[in-house]
Every structure is written in structure tokens, then in C-alpha cells.
Image (cartoon, rainbow, N blue to C red):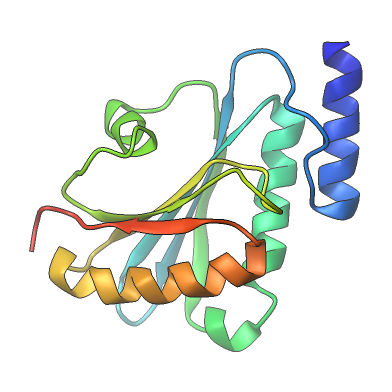
Length: 156
């Protein structure tokens, strides 16, 4: 059943952008880092997936959503893309919704979006990152049809 569920989930995510069911087994984490050429701000996108195939599907689906409007992504470049079985301790804290030094956005695995996700904002003080995070949250809430929330960092 786990194999069938995984194949159905991968097919549904790839073709329709929805998750049919949650596969069994340990999670994998999709990571993608974007860096802005002028400001040197960075966004680290992390998504909880199940199976390496789902990891790549999640990254592709997210990329399609954010690059829908090319003007929004002007100046941003992907600098890292990876799938991992284990997260660094800091990233685990972020997935547990704990406050850390950096501001980050939570995207819940509900409604249309099927991946528990986080977007960490680096290179900007927490006080300045909060309005940026809120703007991203509003944009992604409609694009991904998901519940979003910003967690303000402790530094800056």
C-alpha cells in the first residue's frame, strides 16, 4: 500500500499540484536557497516530503508557483537545491515553530498546498524582515492556497 500511495501522491503532485494521501515512512526534506544579487538577502525554502521522488516534485511545484510572475523574482538566483533525510538542529527548531535568530514564514500542509514548509529570511534584521515576511505570506497564501504565518526572529 505504501508504494501505491507514494506513486499516486507523486503523480497527483506532479500533474495536479495536490496531495492524494500521505505516504508512510520517514520524511525527506526538500531544500532550496535563493539569493538576491543586489541586496544579498537569502531565502531558504524547506519542505517536508516523503520519499526522494516527492522531494523533487515539491521543489518543482514550488518553483513553478514563485516564478509565475517573473517580475517578482527579478534579481533572485537559486544557489542550492538538495533533498535530505535529516535536518540540521536549527532547521528542526524552525519546523517545530520555535523562535530563532532569523524571521521565517510557515506554510501549513493544508488546503491546496500539501507540504509543511518554511521560508527562512537571511541577511535582513528581524525588525525589517517582518514586513517583508508578511508580504511574502500574503502572496503565497493565495498562490499556494495555504495557511501562512510569520515568526519574527530574535536578532535585529
